[in-house]
Length: 576
Ligand SMILES: CC(C)(COP(=O)(O)OP(=O)(O)OC[C@H]1O[C@@H](n2cnc3c(N)ncnc32)[C@H](O)[C@@H]1OP(=O)(O)O)[C@@H](O)C(=O)NCCC(=O)NCCS
Image (cartoon, rainbow, N blue to C red; front, top):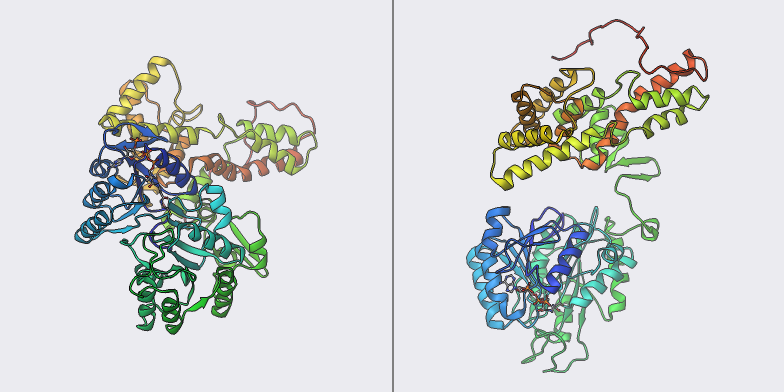
């Protein structure tokens, strides 16, 4: 978990065609934010970075579905209508980056947010970042720097609340150097009238199971720090708070940098904030330089997992696949000893490729996908290649590697090709308002007219591939039915369209696997890898047989060979 923003949230950028909006949309997306589109009045229909631009937030919602977060890169005097438009369109969190938004406008936005049950951060905010997951606004700058500076709060981290934009980044950076992981950094903004204030964000961190402690960069002026102290005293914020308050030297009436940082009528003084927070049990440091070590010390006392080990801190790159520590191997967070004997190989392949364990039925489907491709006799290029190399006296690894090396675009690659073709068919049908059958008929007509080929349909040997029906039956058992099985449905539509031309071209095993993997949401870039994983046992068997049965350097006839293994037998206990 994290608060307010993570990679699952659907985000739009208002002002995406502007100078800053365009540049920041790119950076946010590079960091992992799920940006689905943008809005600029009068520029609907354009694209920015391949993302659709809409004239209004309402039309974005109608096309893209509910939007979780909108971040506004709209100049101050236009923020009020833009923010209210987003709130009225049902966006639940609005992030206002612009500075110098009039106070009355911020109050009008607050009223609209209250009326519609929405929240906003800012104005005058650098934004929010949940390290390793997503960012909205300008925190961290380039994705590369943000990744290097802020250590992801995985499995746990501290939540940072800051009243200063620049210092929210610096606080995250210095905490990272001290080995502190971060769940989320929120810059509440520097203005006098704000959306979420320090106490509101602290309550979010209190409720977030991933956040172990709260680090505050406070400032003179306003009552936000005192309100947090009240929450602590009331027992509503119980997690440790480590705080620094800027502006010690400021005299009454001094306004430094932020509109909200002003001491008036003796309220919001540095000394008053320090006393309130200390009295409520916060660890308050006198200088900013003490904040990282003080935080690390509090975390050591908690014995939690927000503090990195020395090895983790010194690491210059990270991997999320497997964690090795003395006496434990954890694959994607699961102890390998627990996976062994409890999870099938297909389920483990799914886990390592997607990061999550599948349901039992999907695990069974993955097993079926792997088994379906374990071997296809002696003629495929991978087998011929492995046997040829084996016959030269090469080792098992060299021989199998040469077989693997022949798995490419034209051998095994049909899985990915077919998935992509079906994906485009689905997208085009939706864009053109046509049914899948109409789009499939048009595609088949195009293929026939141009004399081109379509991957995943037809077979050299089989007119009806024995593996396809079985895979589709298991896919249905695994819940891959409409509307979750768009690619499988599209494959069926293409098959019907070919049949209608009088020359049927049935889906083959590659096409079926491509459609199924796409409907399971697996990244197409690994499809060829899944084929390699599946085919490796077959290649090992062929190489071993070649080296034990055949003479070295024999002339391998790719066609004239016969099978001399056991006759057809039934699988014990096979389910239908
Ligand atoms: C918000 C801000 C970044 C915008 O600056 P900018 O990108 O240079 O401004 P631009 O004029 O290029 O772009 C604004 C875009 O918003 C668009 N816009 C205007 N009203 C809009 C609305 N209601 N909805 C969506 N977009 C809107 C404009 O049409 C413009 O796009 P265009 O250039 O394609 O016409 C700038 O005004 C600002 O406040 N900067 C300071 C930010 C800051 O420091 N914050 C505090 C951090 S601590």
